[in-house]
Length: 279
Image (cartoon, rainbow, N blue to C red):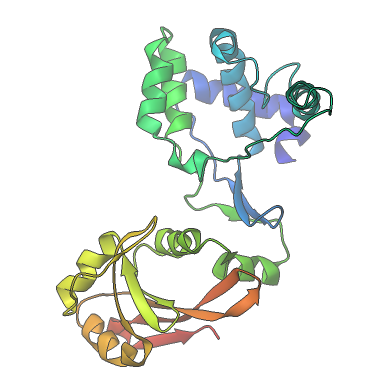
């Protein structure tokens, strides 16, 4: 809104920043959506979206011909309605105009955007680029991290806080990764039923500190070790001597069906002897 109030001045200022290579993306706005599932969305500031359109207008003529026909997102004369119309044609063709059964496969690429290798993306785009100004701008935009100090908006404060702190996933692996990535600076005690468990790279951390034997693997999360919940106090004391930040994530009862909720039981900072309960 601030950009649009004085658009001419803001555009000239943005032009100067781009010409002098002093442009830098502003913090993104972060909000949470609940449907069709919990998602954390990062929206670019309006002035940065102007820059994105500038890049698209330059890159689109080069890359549009390389896309397959049946790719419908963010393309001229495509979109949701065109995709639905095309799908109906495929359904009629596969089912011989409804005279026989037809089957479809619905798939999705898990965490697609956040899993893109930015170095590879930049290398692919820059390989065909002969304009140094565009190359510089591509690098600025691609390697910008929208999750760094975002402005949080969208839901009322209390609800946004609950969604941010206590996500609900039917997929256990997604839930563990959410806590592990969000609180990567903490030594994480993660409750699974009657045990607190450690996975992947955190297994090595735990085995350096605790007398764990090799555990079995959990699908999608790799190596696993753990201990019974009644031993939490013992293992916390050992961890307090080694780590600056410790977090205990507690499993709650099932919310509905396969939907499971976990929440932060406590955050422990040994040097301050401070425990913050979030019951």
